[in-house]
Image (cartoon, rainbow, N blue to C red; front, side, top):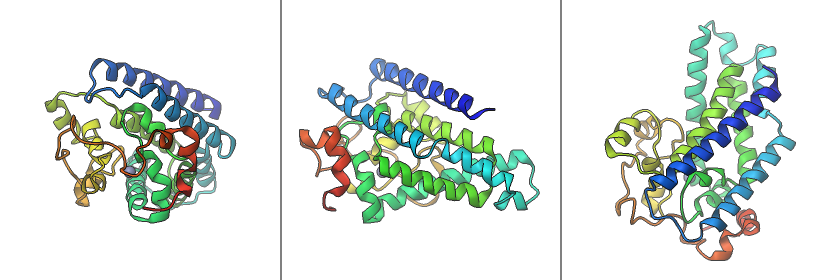
Length: 265
Ligand SMILES: [Zn+2]
């Protein structure tokens, strides 16, 4: 499939999901909607647009391009092993998800990486647009990390395309301010990270904020002991964000972009 078609399909899925989630959030919100929502959305969508441009201009289709090059050269682990192709797709999806989990864990524990990642956490509310609010430098770093893993694995092109779509979609879903029936949440979080599971990670409480690093699969947090089922204060009462960046000016687009330059905390 030509790369432009893949990009068009990705954009259609992206906007379809974002629009669908915003409708669901409006109909079934989990937490009270914030009074500053218009400003927040402008900032978050602004960051999302910058990231889209950065990825288009600097690294157009980077992950997919790396996968094409790696497979053309027969490089990477899966090109050495004679595994059925369906199995290499499944293993690639699993290992890429584990790599993103590990990167997220590192972003919370390595001070330099935290400076880039904390802008995402400084959102004072959490909804589908929070999934777009990653610092452009963190997006570039994340792309370089993914490229390394794709090259080492020799991940099939289709697995990389699927992973990119899944990662985008699941990030929007698990940031949504969406009230799912408890029974559905309990069942769903056996397979994917749900909004209630990820919201714990956006708590101001350090103990909760260093939990639930998963984006797609919840299994890594269970396996490595970083899983926390619910916030102590409950979803309606818990405070979202960081203590350090709660002023109105901290939430303006330009100050969000400058945030990594501020001293570490
Ligand atoms: Zn985080």
